[in-house]
Image (cartoon, rainbow, N blue to C red; front, side, top):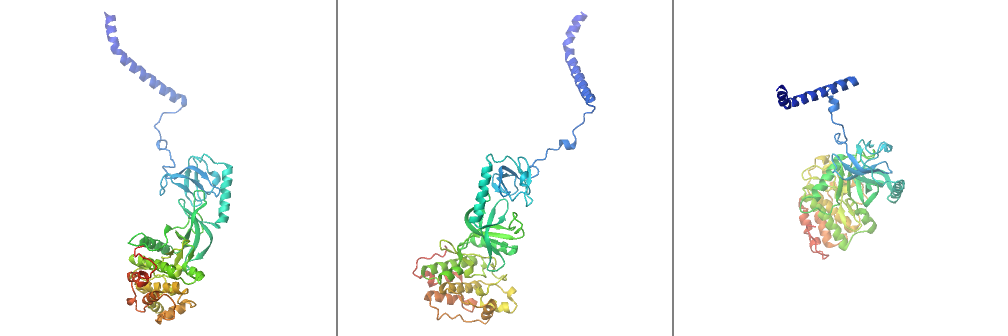
Length: 437
C-alpha cells in the first residue's frame, strides 16, 4: 500500500524535482565559470551599453561609388549631407591627404570638410587615371584655365585667363566654365564676377532676382546663374570674397559700336528696344538703375543685346551708392559738386536721362561726352547745358526721342511707358514691337 501511495504521488513530485535540478545546474555553472576565470559577473558598463559611433550618428557625409581624381579631389554619390540631397554626385575640394583615401575611411579636405568613404567605384584602373590627367592638361590649354576655382563641394566653376575690371572698377570679371564631376570644363562659358564688396554683390543678386523673376516683364537682362556669398572654399585666393555667375556675352555694346560704328536700321531699333525694355523692367520693380550706359549691355553671339551690372540699382526715393558721370543727369551733378551727392533722392527720371545718352551713342557711334574727363563731364552737367542735336545726322524720330529724354527739367522727361509708345518704336516701319517682350 505504501508503494502504491508512493507511485500515485510520484507524478506530482516530478516537476518540483526538475525545477530544483535546473536551478542547481545553473547556479553551479555560473559559480564554476566565475571561479575558473577569476572574475565576477557584472552588469555592462555605461561605455559598453553606448551604441557604436558611426559616420551617420556623427553627421559626416558619406560618399559611395567614389574615386580619387588626379587633382586630389574625390567624386562620388553623397548621402547624409546637411544641404545636398542623397544620391547627388558631388566633387569635393582637394583632400589634405589623398593617399589615405580608402573604403570605410574618413578623409578631410583642404577646406576642412570631412567625408566617410563607402564602397569605391568598381572600375578604376591606372590607365583611366592617366587618361583623366591627360584630359585635364588638355582642358587647361584649350580653355586657358588659370587653376583658380570658384564654388564649393556641390558646384564649381573653373576660371579662365586674366580678369578684367568691372565698369565701377570694384570687381573682377572672369570668363569661366562649369566643372563636371571629373573637374573638367563643360558647357558654354559663363561670366564670374568676384568682389570683396559682399554687400554690393548681394544687392546685385537681389536686384537680378527682383527684376527678372517678378512683374510683367523681365527685360532683356542676362540670366543670373548662381550667387555665392563665399566665392570659394576650394582655393584660398577668393575665400574672403563673394561671387556672381551670369550668362556671358561675346562683347560689350560700347566695344561693339567702337568696332562696327554707329547702328542703323533694324539693328539700331533692336538695340534701342532692348535697352528700353531693360529700363521698363527696372522701373516696374520700383528701382532706379543709376548706371545705364553702353558698357553695361552685352552683345551675344547671336547678336542679341542684353543688360548687365545692377549692383548700383537702388529703390526709388533712396540715395545713390555710386555714380558714372556719362550716365549722370544735371540735377545729380549739381548736388554732387555741392557735397550733397550721398543725400540725393533718386527718381526714375534719372535713368531717362541716361537712356537718352545711350540712344545718342548708339545712333552716332560715340558718346556725347567722349574725350572729356569725369570731372569735366560733371562740371559741364552742373552748368545745365542744352543738348544740341541740330547737327546730328540721325533718324528724325530717334532724334526727337533723344531730345525728349535729355530735357534739363526732370519732370518733363518721359517715363518708360511713354518712351515705348514713342513714334520711333511704334511707327518706325521696321516691324511690330511688343511692350511685354
